[in-house]
Image 1 (tube, helix red, strand yellow):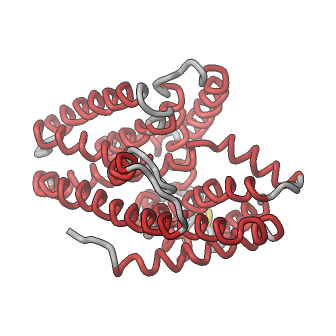
Image 2 (cartoon, rainbow, N blue to C red):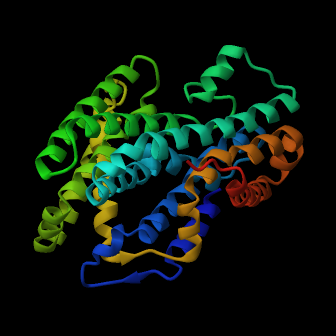
Length: 350
């Protein structure tokens, strides 16, 4: 499995460029899509590995190395999705003001929910065709992301919650000037903290231990000019500080994760990781057509990638996966790309 990491590394360095000067276009959409493209590939490998682990008994040392590295990465592979999402929301608020906030229930929240429900409907149909049946209550909860019927769900549930909290905060406090935006951010922080505390009684920590990365994206956009000035004055120091902070919090998390029920340490670790990636991309331009396409098709790639994994595992698990696990990965990836290309025909646009 580690060979697929090598493929990702090659893709990252395809058309990469380095700059001595700081390039603040790193937060332009094509650049952020490229970074998201890298991490959606890591998500794909994360999701497919359990199927291989189930049917394949002859793991070699490189497969085990993948397992160890994947466990270390943990929830870090979704941090940039959260950070860039928060950044994008705030940028839109700054540019379009109240007009954007008024469209959030329709464009950001309802659109995401409806397209997620369509995906769940496909999973339900496929599971039924494969002879799998679920209680009505589980199916109902799956359509709102609280339960899963084989689909990915926690990220959609959490990001929609972030959008809802942001909408209520921004619509109540306003976004027409800096002071109103600042107040809105304070209320958003409180709302997200309440979400985290509430969720810790019902779900595992991975449901909420990257939420503050979304908040960090909001705050960074709000203070972008100030932040860029500070980065210009002390880029190397900030990169070193962010890296040391990230590594320190990572080590701390290993010791306290069993006790940190609300995921506070990992949330701050996520923020530090987001800033490390952000600072690196100011000097290292990672952007090519493949990564941009992957990042710009994040939703269908994320939500539909489990369909070929499920179907092929159900039909050919004991033959294909146990004998040719790498071929299984390649076939699943090809079908995932095809599904993402077909998504435009079923996507609900509001």
